[in-house]
Image (cartoon, rainbow, N blue to C red; front, top):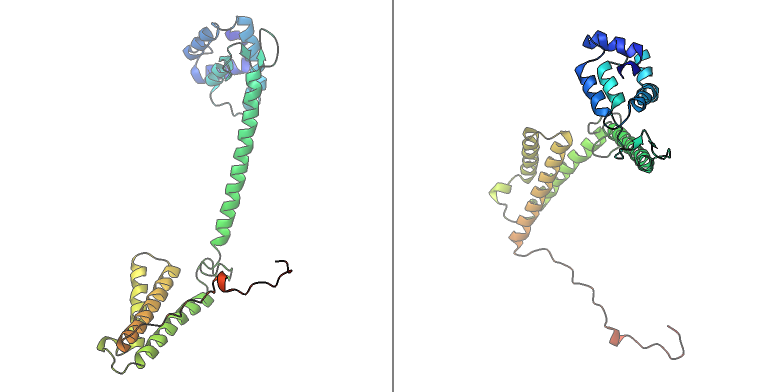
Length: 258
């Protein structure tokens, strides 16, 4: 039985395992003979040497485990039908239905895996492209992923405008609270503090700018609230639009379609 293996494979086993009949292989032969005749196993080994790619690997110098290859050539295939021999039912000589279905499933799984890999590659490409654009406006302005000067200027201008708005609100008060004596400076200071807090928390450049922007807007809203409170009232909310009921609608003249 062991003589069924190609001479070059047996030589490789002697080189790596110091014998062409290692115990692992002998055990595999004994087990395989419980389900097949010696002649059937010889046919299996000779067939699989070529069809399973062992010959090509050997010639390319890629057959790293000769004993493992010999054992694999002896074992029953993956089909759950014990009477199946590499896709053919021995008793009838017909193609194995289970193997046909397994082949279909393999192709479907392979196609799904290829699609998934393609989608993952496309997603990686999109992420790489996004990494090069400004994270604020998402435009490629040559900043290699950092916030572009236009966005930095816009956010800093927003902070300055919030400070000016607060200053105008407080300036309209007859009596200015001490803590709002310099509204502009207060808003700018709160924005700077928020930006520093964000930096220490590990935020990136955009996170720092957003923190300052939000803090400035919040401070400006607080200044506006303080002014309204000093006036003794809140902002007026326009009344909802009045809707006439259907009963008060003028009836249509007779004879006209709706």
